[in-house]
Each structure stands twice: as C-alpha cells, then as structure tokens.
Length: 179
Length: 174
Image 1 (cartoon, each protein chain N blue to C red):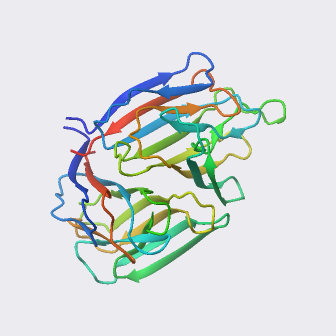
Image 2: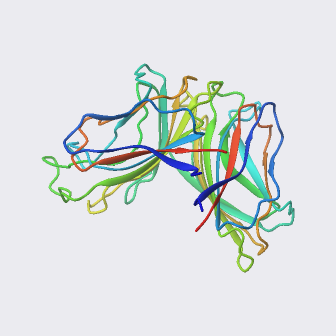
Image 3: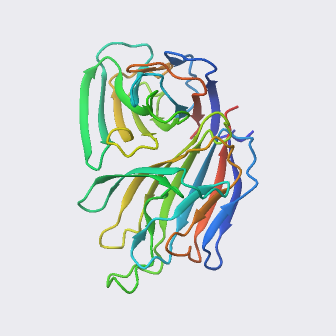
C-alpha cells in the first residue's frame, strides 16, 4: 500500500484566478501540495492567497523568513482573510521592470498541511518557495500559516492574489498516510 | 516495495513528557518524520530536544536559523548531550488549539561508516504579531557517532506534549 498518494493534479491550459482542490477525503494524516507556477503579477515576485473550506473571514495568520540576494528578514501578519503562501511566487514582471523574466520561468513551491482532519486542533501549514532564478534578484521563502479554525479541511483554494495563474502552471495535491 | 513506509505513529491522548521511537529498523535508507505538536509549558513557545539511541554523551551539535521578529538570527551549539533547540512549537500561553508543524529528515541513518546528520523545519504559529510569539526555525544537526540510528527520543525544554500532538516516522527506501 502506498503511503503517499496523489489526490489530484491541475495543469492550467489557460489563465485562472484560482485553483481549488475540493472533496478532499479525510483518509490521510497530512496533505502536501507541490507546484510549479507563474503568475501575471505586474512584478517579478508576488504572494498568492491560500484559503481553506471557502472561508475568507479574518482567521488566518502568516509568518515567514524571506531573503533575496542580500536582505533576509522575518515577516508576520495576523487576522487576515488568507494565508500568504507560498510566500514567493514567480510573477510575469512586465511593465515596471526592464529585467522581464524569461517566458519559461516558473517558480517551485511545496506546501505542507499538517493533521488536516483533526477537529480538535487548528490547522497549520508550512511552505517553501522560490522565484525564478533568471531574475536578477530571486526570492526564497520559508513560510508558515495558521487557519484558526478546527474544521476538518475538505477544500483548498490557491488564489492568484494580484494576478492570475498562468498557462503551464501545475499543482498536485498528495495525501500522506500514517498507517 | 513502497518508497515511503510507516515505521510508527503516535497520537497523544494525554500529556506526555517524551515521545520515544525505539527499535527503528535499519532496513531503510532515510528517515522522515512529520509532527504536529503543542506544549503545556506556561510560555508562548517551547523547543523540542531530541536524543539519538539514548546516548547522553556530548556528541551533538547544531546550527539554527531562526526568525521570531523581523530580524533573522542564527546561532549554533556543539559538544552537547542531545540536540537542543531542535524544533520550535507553540506553548500554553499562545492561542489555544494552535499546533505547530514540523518536518525532520535524517538521511543515511543506518550507515555505520559516517556520522548522522539531520535537517529540521518547524514553525510556531499564533494570532499574535508580538515578537517571539511566533517563530520559524531551520536546524542542521550532527550526531558525531557512526552507529546506526535505532532510537529517537523527543522531549521538551520546559513542558510536556499536549493531547492531539501527533508524530509519524517514515522509513524511506532508495
């Protein structure tokens, strides 16, 4: 029996404002999203929105440490309508930037969602992410987030934030068993 | 054969000072541990300690990268009796029902020719932006011993693990 199973994969053939995984079974211990994505952000790097179960009230917090070439720093925000994860996502970087990214640049991220089916605890996530390295100042982030709600997670939405997810972005949701 | 295999899983139904994985088989290539935990310490955060093979000799060292404010910091420690400050988790004085996530990689754990290393990723989350009421931590750890890892014992600096804390240890096949 496989311990890690693919629950669903979304590959975008066209721009999308968000990607949602719904009807997530409660048969796993943890969830993990692995993604390679690019966004229409009007800048080289941006922050998408992670929400659970369609909840958009102010029950989310985000904490992170981020760095680019020279400026490591901690970050925190609470009482938000979403988790800022993955913290660094490759944007299209047009107009305001002369160092436009290559059209083939997509950024990686791994988002871990712990103990998502436990109705006695809030839900915590951790997310590693980075922007495309061909940009002159790529970002790398290690972020965590809190969903201050004990409801079992049955759907996950990755909103595009200030932009849309671009064609060619890929999102896979995995379940990890504990027995 | 499956690449990931569950060696053991513990979900606490009552407080526990330690979580002990003994008799870890040497039949895998790597160990992968995932946890979601909270401490009952009367504090905002607590830190997980880890001991290998019940060995309390001063063979442990680590380097920490930490953010609990907008300024990041790093520090290290060597010649210690266990892995101190191994992971960061929320404690009693923070938002109730907030549990941390944590991941540990112990590569090549059954090799008897080289020292054992570990990488950890952990986070204390809350609803507070007050400095050090939250924390993000990455740790690189060394156990200066060539014995295969057969036991891992997780304790806490101050408190005990609270009910609903979960630990799963996976054996990863190359």
